[in-house]
Amino acid sequence: MKNNIKLFIAAGVFSLTTGCTDLDVDVKSKYIEYPSTSEVAIEAKMADVYYAFREALGGIYNRTQTLSSDEATGISFDGDYYDGGVNSHPSLHNFMANDNGLAYWSDLSSGITKCNQIIVDLGGDEADPANIAPARVMRAFYHFILMDSFGDVPVLDGIPDEDEAIERKPRKEVAEFIENELIESLPYLSDKNNAATYGKPNQWMAKALLVKLYINWTVYTSSDVTAYSPSTANGKLNDCVKYCDEIIKSGLFDLSDSFRKKFFPDNGVHIKDFIYAMPFDSRSAKGMYYGRFRTFRRIDDGNGGYYGGKMGNSCAGNYAMNPEFADLFSLEGDERNNAVLGGEVYIYDASTYEPTAVPFIYKETSPLVFSKTITLKAENEQLNTGADFNGWRQGYRSIKFYPDPTEYREYSRNQSNDVPVFRFADILLTKAEAILRGASATNGDTPESLFNQIRAYVKAPAFDGTLTFQELLDERGREFFDENWRRNDMIRFGTYENEYGFHKQGFPTARFDKECRILPVPQSVLDENKNWKQNPGY
Image (cartoon, rainbow, N blue to C red; front, side):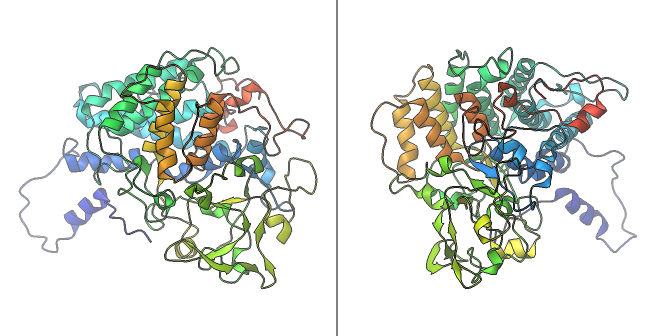
């Protein structure tokens, strides 16, 4: 279990000011107003700003990004976990405005509002730029996630009047706003990368966000979401390489940590690959539930539970890896293969999270064998495999974000695995991609040399030949699955409308319209903004 030091500064200030029992002490000074310019006060105010997206990232945002990509299908079990299509709709690109998987819009808009409020509290236009730079960067990050998901969205750079009608801006203008906010804030951000900056916006987080923005620039600035093509010239590729190089040359990040250990429940600031991560703790920073949906439905009905202990709370077990995606994990010696559970399942050691030689036996009679193929009882949008042993074992499962069974049992399914948003490995592969797309090579790097840095650290065979876009996309799948980037990657590489899983031609309700590259605006948001129109295609 992770032993994080969590600084709840606001609570600490409260306890210090109320803990004294001598009520006759002479008070030498009093704050009539909140001490907005003190470092401690600013940090206390910033807490809500930094972590406004935590719950969505640990839950419904991950669901939507994962199931709408080729990574996994959201299956159900005779109605169990069908839930009106909340899992099957993204799997078939048949998104509905009422799907609760889209509700993270409200988390993002709330986060933006908190950013704007603290900017006002710290002085607004008259504020010290260094004090408000972190809030501006978080505001840019929340706009980025909102724009990436929903296309045209408001640019909220202030607190609107109560009766003011909010207007959506073209996606291109939102991308330009994000770029401007990041570039203007960079000089005022910390250049440190340590416990004090972990999970917060520093220079490296902002530069990594610029890298993501620039590699997707032609997606975001296309005149129409359906008009984008991977062959469209991207005028920001050299800028993308520039910020990749600044991160690489900093010397603050590397690939020294083994692949699986980076995602264990005790990960954190010591992981040198993490540029920016969302901290989670099963007790004090809750909301991380990746394991719940990727774990065998009846794991506690076996001989000990294959994670090394009883889970104590039910597991959904309904994110089944698509066979096409499972096929990626076949490189000889590749450590990433061990983050996928397929075939016969063995019990893991509770202290090392490594497999033992003891097979997991369901109800003391049936060895658990996850099948690569997924077989439905009927071809319809329920994606129903059946509520029995055979139905529950359909599809390989990810164990990348390994759930500690004690935490899962004692803290209502919560996990302590921090979730990386930006990683050094991504910077290397993005630089490789930018050069492959036409950027000028720098520092003697080639797409192949950058690519093989990834292969080397995971102990996979070195790539020998001329790198192709398909090879690069496949490698990104192996490296970043479950990290919420696959949908983003597939749109950029032009494979989002391909067939995979049950997203196939002729399958009932499966959609292949390019309008599905962005999601529908949640109905609850449209109800509050009567002047808005739903995104095309919905």
